[in-house]
Image (cartoon, rainbow, N blue to C red; front, side, top):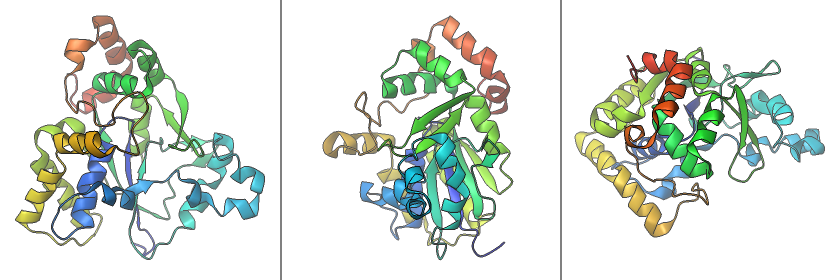
Length: 283
């Protein structure tokens, strides 16, 4: 493994537990005692930040002013990853598909060490994402089935390409690096087991050394519970929340059974069935 392969992606379709995973990872990697605090989250920030593309300003100022457009930002994905300081590990959150955009690939394999991908039942995503976006569930399902969509970073300054839920999952399955896929539902119902699997992946294929003991693991689980994160957001706010809904809203699985109509369930399962079966959401 080349020394400069120090970029690790924390990837997911929106509303699939990415921020919860970042909370676990920052407590695991950037603390000695495993005690999480929201102030740690920027240590695993979004790749699509304008300062990561600051070099573009010198190359072509008009492009720097238009990084919100996919045809512009995609030209600089690889160079942005090349120019990062690789003296240490760099973890990046992303909701991007790992796709080509006009023959321009998202993840730079020369710099990528691996990927942690969060996958969630798309029937539950439809509910959570509709609240987040302020759209109806039917509109959100159509959104999740569109071949290609563009979203933006929080500041609306850098474009992000996402795709159908199943295309999104497949695009990261095809990433030719060490990777682990974690189901949101397993993280929710058996946090300790998933955390230990994650630690094994980090120490093994990713070759990252971590200070670790059982007390630290217990602290991580205790201070990153969904209810605690939700309470912290209610008390102090959270910079990644939308104007339509709290960021940490319900954090439950199987909500779709009470909320979605049978037509909505059928539409999701018929269109996304292949990868829903792969991750045991349907038989």
